[in-house]
Amino acid sequence: FSGSTYADQQYPTLNSLSSSLHGGLNDLQLEFQTLALNFCDAELKPFAREWDERKCVSYDTLRRAADLGFGGLYVSEENGGLGLSRFDTSLIFEILSMGCVSSTALLTIHNMTAWMLDTFHDDVEFKREYLSRLVSCEWMGSYCLTEAHCGSDAAALKTSAKKDGDYYVISGS
Image (cartoon, rainbow, N blue to C red; front, side):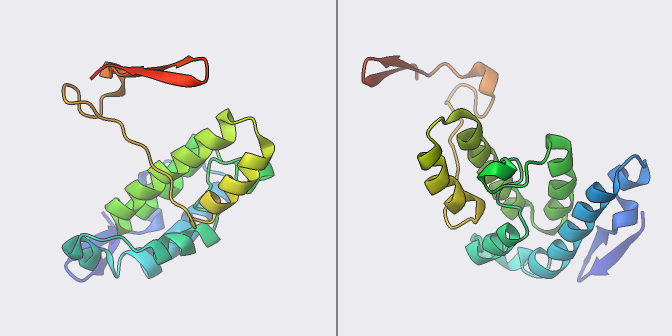
């Protein structure tokens, strides 16, 4: 495979990515790939090893990613995001993960929680207040998905929450 060498690792170039090689991407998708690759080369690759060794994440770096729109990839344009499809977003995450898998994983989960708020919450003022902070990565969104018997297999989860008047009744493990 063709790629550039950084320290003791080889990283693919835009032309070596499977999604680009097989064609079919439009100009905007290629532009997003290029933007992600430039960010990856400048902001992730040079620091990923240090972050892993220190077991930390750079929230300043994630905020710089948000300046490029990467903090609200799925969030509707109406609510401050880019409103991208899952496919378009996967093109960005594919590249970012080549620079730092753990930072990219955090960013993917964050994007999913911002999308859930955008999609499933009805209160416009609530969205305005919270989504702006999520899209900018001022606040980071996350969720927990695990049970002792199934790890992160969402289909096997047994815990549930059912609304009962003004409260939720939680049952399961």
